[in-house]
Length: 181
Image (cartoon, rainbow, N blue to C red; front, side, top):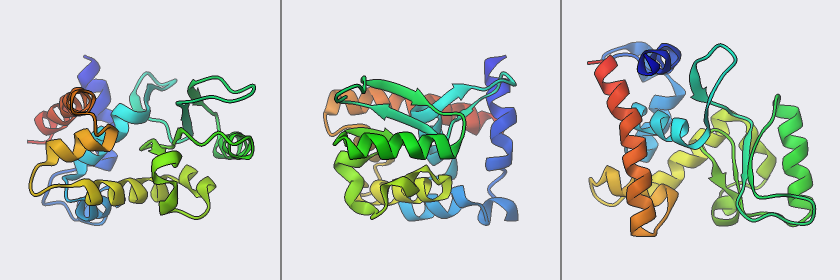
C-alpha cells in the first residue's frame, strides 16, 4: 500500500517516456544535464527530502535543511520549514553564523562542498534552481555509464556510505519503474 501512495504523488512529475509532458518537464531537463533518467533524479529527491505529507503521501519537501555540523544555538539534524520564506530566513541566519556544512532543499545540495556552484545560496530554496544545481553535481561526478556510482558519489565519496545510499535510491527507482512500465 505504501508504494501506491508514493506513486500517486509522483505521477505529475513522471509519465511514460514517450510523453511530451515528460520531455518538457524540469525533471527531464535536469536529468538530461545529469546523464540520468528522470525517475533516478526524482528518487534522489525522495531519499534526500522525502517526508509523509498531511495528505499521507510521501514526497520530497522543498524547504528542508539538514545541518550536518551545528554551531552556537544550531543543533545538527533535519529542519523542515512550512514555507519558502521561513526556510530562507533560517538558511540566512545559519549562514550568517558561519554554519555552512548544511544540505539545502529538495535535493539537499551541500553548501560546504557545492556552494561554489551558486552565488546566492538562498536561491537553493527555489526547487527549480535546487534541482538544476543537483543535476550539475551529478554531471560532474558521473563516470562513464555508471549511474549507480554517480548516485553513490552524490551522497559520499566514501565507498561504503555511497553504496548504501545508492541502494536506498534504487529502491525508490524500482517502485517508479514498476508503476510506469
